[in-house]
Image (cartoon, rainbow, N blue to C red; front, side, top):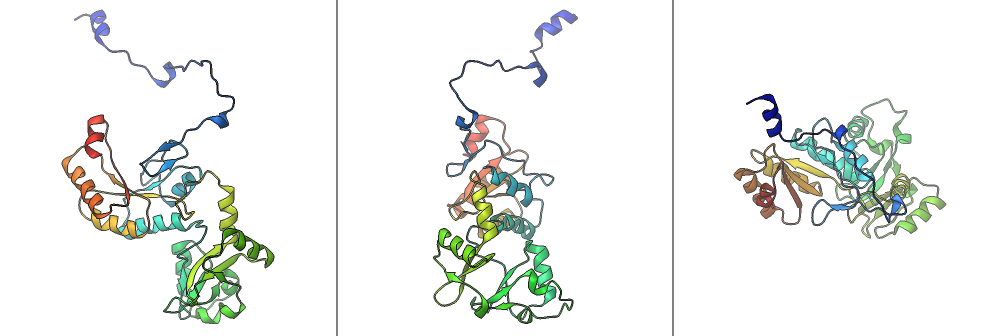
Length: 294
């Protein structure tokens, strides 16, 4: 076979630099009129048709938060311990929960050393103080402990007690909460049930941020949405269970070659165990593989 015959048999190959999209006539008056929303699953609609790679060098809580603000979803990678992956999910769900239903709490017997540990773990500097029955007793903010040096000092010696707090009922609306925070010059508004147990927390910071991100991808409670990866062997079921408890919005069965019997079996097992959780699987590269996984 000579050189000319060889090149005639080779298919045409091009790179991105070889391709130009030719502009054509359009009826679109403004780029703001273009809708690029797309469904990630039947129940999850993205505002933009991109998601970041669920790699250990790409998507952890910070990336997931950033893309959720723009209308996409980050999927936390699975190359953590189960506990660490769960914490990454919780950080996203907690970062600007409009009503923080499960704020980080302390007992009065905790010490400054415990406080510093929780600051590092949850990236928060204010804590509600409760008793064993979850009844609100007070609040501990950075102003209460910033000059304290003794790591053994108890929380009940530093906190602002309940009688000095302004609180609101558990069903307080956003507008009412904004009014209270504004009139009383507050940063935080604890919510309590009729029996005095803690029901949640409004913060001025969360409300301001919530209203500044109209395109954010949020769940029905106003929290940012986030997914998390699991494998298909080993502890994948235990990992999935803990992630579901952390209220993850989507589980991704993440393997290099998704068109395999054990991957399909893993997805079936997850669907039976968690019928209300959105599930993705991959990686796949053909339509046949996609159909088998579906």
